[in-house]
Image 1 (cartoon, one colour):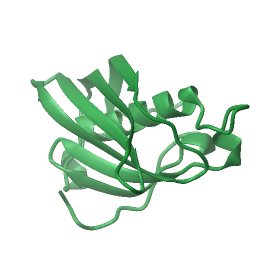
Image 2: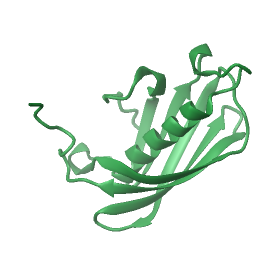
Image 3: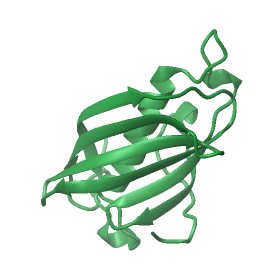
Image 4: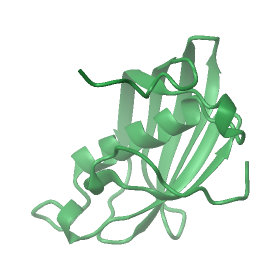
Length: 140
């Protein structure tokens, strides 16, 4: 994986903003700091936030490449999520890698862990790969 941290430039909602994105070919990792605004009434990271983070990291990894000109935008086709542990307001590590696919579809696995390496969730997904630059459209 590319060891250079890439500044985040995305249209992700602030509640899903990741940092320290590392990209390899078909793989990516990032960090997320869960705050009080991400917790449910029991003080645990909300499942919807976990699902959103899985979608974000797998979408990044699906068309990932260290060379920005070779990156492909991706659209989620399906995602399956497994909640394994719980987290509070703490730093988290997100990782995803491509496990198969072809020119237009990528299959991925992902994992969210706390700073100690304890698993919070795993996921599998299928993503449609778009042509590089296709995420930029003129709005009417």
